[in-house]
Length: 338
Length: 256
Ligand SMILES: Cc1cc2nc3c(=O)[nH]c(=O)nc-3n(C[C@H](O)[C@H](O)[C@H](O)COP(=O)(O)OP(=O)(O)OC[C@H]3O[C@@H](n4cnc5c(N)ncnc54)[C@H](O)[C@@H]3O)c2cc1C
Ligand SMILES: Nc1ncnc2c1ncn2[C@@H]1O[C@H](COP(=O)(O)O)[C@@H](O)[C@H]1O
Image (cartoon, rainbow over all chains, first blue to last red; front, side, top):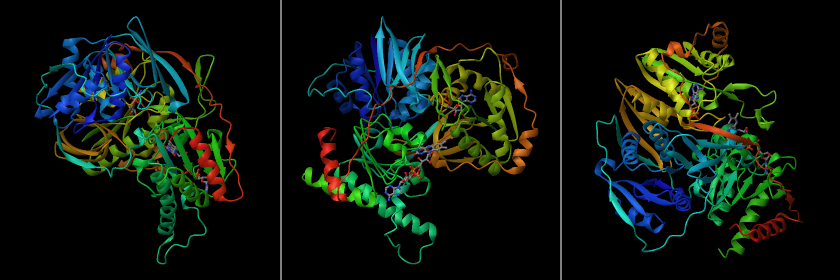
């Protein structure tokens, strides 16, 4: 099978799920990594090291910023002339959008956010979660090329082999009168990205519930609650930094203004699948579970023994997070030599 | 300004969805407007409030899907259209996009078309970009702010790295992220208006298209393997003792 793997990147930094997709493609046959951008030599080199047999490179100033219309047209033109059997994308914002558009151009469909796949006689059957992971479906596509986006962290990242190389093929950027113009970026605050994180520590509404705290004078009720929540969230962040983890949150914590939406885990937030997920003061509503149920090891700290989160957790502490979380941070620091 | 918002009816997010005898069921949980589409309705209404015009809600589905349209009407949409045809069942996203783009073209003169970012049943998140591609309009998906000025628009789009600021010419397709702002609740007057609304139904004949063919097939739907976890509740004489024991157990799992 001949596969195109779209390497999603921002300013030359590839999103890790791109390499996972490359690893999957390698198990199916020959792989051309598709790289669009401006000044992409280093990324092309890395793609060879992750196993690409060939790199299809459109290196052009007109592609310096991602624009769906220009990228999709360039991709569809390359796919139309080379007729790969399969187009693989990481399920990232750009990957999903390009897959959607390429499917229209190439008159085919997309199997999106796939967590497992098998190929037989050139035909792929995928498995993917639907209804927020409450069900799994197997899907096939009756037209060619087959287009698939792979959920991040659902497949192993291949080993990087320094110095490995392959065929570099230049592809012309489709330039045209595209209707969109990129004016600039507002980058987010950094830290470990939730969807790529192997460890996540999350806080819920419970972070504001420490009766022992007295907020400074002069705050109204809402401000006092947020102040309390920030003290609670600081404990969650301390534990996260001791574990080099990303910080997550429930929707209740986001809606109450304790943390920005970018931290929300769940059906209307991010879907994550870390090796370790520690939930602090989160009840485990079905919409929250939808975003983290596939985590390898789940640990819950909640003062209510009946909280539904304990049904999914391997280890639990029934207790006050204001006592348990800082103690856990100290215990890990000691063990991890920090 | 002519504004369209595409809404879909889905089982409530709290529904216990399971497969029984090969069929997806959700007990007596209600069917509701897709939660993401409420953001789309909100965005459509805000544009109407800023620039005048009309908001038309459309859905493709069975007769019951009118309830999702009624929710949009109750929030403040001016009118609604149901697209319903026996040939339109089990469509995949590209086929759905073909129908919706045909409907948007038939309405004619549309400048803004709003979509939810993702339908919470199929969890695809493809229809907005696919409809845009078919219409040959810019796809301004995952927008958190939208500013229309004359025939152009400026949006901030949520990307993994933060936000991308994009300008484009209208007409355009939009989908929204949660940062856009919470959707309004239906008003009492709105609910009364919606309950009396007569919603026209368009068949494929009205759209002058033949039934688009699905290429993606769901060959088997299953309940996920139940996570046979028994929670080990860690206890101890003090928070410190509990934390020490818990840290040891987590480290023994070799996930760090
Ligand atoms: C359409 C829709 C989409 C949604 N999407 C999402 C989503 O993406 N993500 C999401 O998270 N939710 C989502 N929700 C909301 C969800 O239903 C719940 O309301 C939310 O997850 C609750 O958050 P929580 O667990 O922090 O708060 P609560 O349910 O209020 O739970 C707080 C928990 O903290 C515990 N607690 C309190 N004090 C302490 C203490 N001192 N120490 C330890 N424990 C303590 C309590 O026992 C309780 O279990 C959605 C809802 C809808 C309708
Ligand atoms: N049958 C439909 N009728 C109207 N709008 C739809 C339909 N299906 C999808 N949409 C729109 O497309 C968005 C994304 O859907 P999807 O790509 O299926 O996740 C939804 O939030 C709706 O705005």
